[in-house]
Length: 86
Image (cartoon, rainbow, N blue to C red):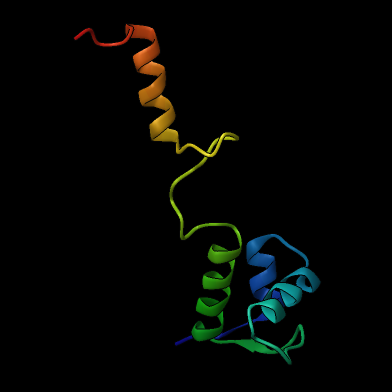
């Protein structure tokens, strides 16, 4: 397993190494410097943190009114076709 340094990984991600170090610290990978090696476990921990912080766990997108995107499409379809008659 090839380990890369934080500087190399930041270059690969096209972001400053300082910003990557901040994200790593927030993800619980503390005590690292720009020249330190980054393991696969560290990368996985960072990815999990970013998914949680950006709402990646909840795949339902919501509108301003709190409805999911699917509910909004159903409602829009009903409006355009009219309400079903009894």
